[in-house]
Image 1 (cartoon, rainbow, N blue to C red):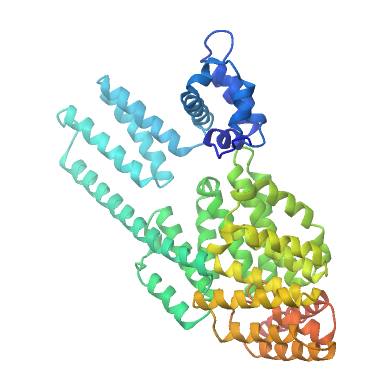
Image 2 (cartoon, helix red, strand yellow; image 1 turned 90 degrees about the vertical axis):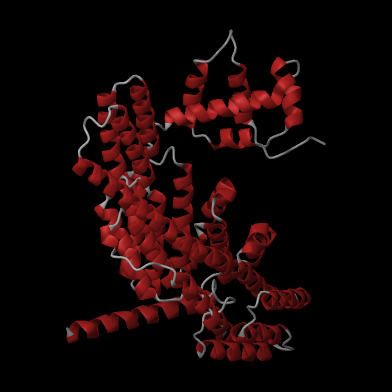
Length: 527
């Protein structure tokens, strides 16, 4: 059987864009020895592979000298590809420009061209300040000090020395503050990714313990990175404890920050994506449909304004962000037929990008796709989607997504009459929730009710039990992990009233929208 392994060189070459591949050929041609370049031929072979198979590779290049030291050949090709990427992206990366300027300054310094060195360092300092590169600013300062020393402090004055010392202190404080904020944010996001939003008082207390380590700041007096990290962390905390207004406030501060620093928006597009995505979601929670659609338009406008050809990471994020939002909006509005038209495109995108999409986002998209198929009574497609989710081992590290997948599977078993499979899956889910200290009152109510529904001896009894669950869910507004990704209240209502899920969701949405419009009208009259 062929020996297939995961290979770094193969993964790197497969990740290249057409432009990057063309540039590599040009870059490699400058290092050709003799008539043929073995590296280019090996590169061409790797480029055409669909999976790495070393046994087939050795058979293809049988007799070639480079196979005798293949690990060294691969390492050199890997280094050449990285070197070509470094050259290709040199003009588009602020960090690359700055480090190149620092290296040039070192060369000028070694040639005792101190005035030229100082001029270059001042140019680098302006660029680093514009893009809030505090670490590089300290390195620039170190090189400036070296310049002064080697000229016996000829150009130094006491006021200039004091200014230099003060600047260093401010930058060190800014870096220390950034690090402090980063660790708070990381602890918060690790909990969010693993367990999801707070559902109990204990969950809320845990999130509060994390956020209490946040320093109180007048953020406007700090650089871009500290301002961003502060508002980003605050918005995520508010999101985790369902304080939507507070989360919206901090997210809008982030949007204002990007609008005030448009050059940072272009450089931190991933963060800008996240800000808009979160604003859409929070606006929906607040019932501000106009706002959510406006933010979605801003998100979709990005590839029209910025060239993402050589930024696969951003293309992946844009695909995942926009589609997950659209699926969320369409499913909340009960527009399942419109959503159905997107399913093939979504599946193709998931297959194309695969593990490049963050696990929570990837699971979220499949969960929404499965929910839509359940709503359309497309049981077979729903089963396939749920099977893919359950076979994705990464989902086990994200409890909310795992639990939601199991709940959708239980609903599917009820609808298709798989009672034996249902009881087995129900017990497994109950064990999982107990083991992870998540089997709270709300979860018990839902799962026990679903168990009674599955065991109902007649359609009338099943309908009555669906109605009983509907009433319990209507009177309980606590967020439960088993109802996070599907409107189980609407599902129970549709089964108790023998109406389609799509019809109930759409009716509830229209009623909610009308209520919001009436509320706005009343506020306008009062104003």
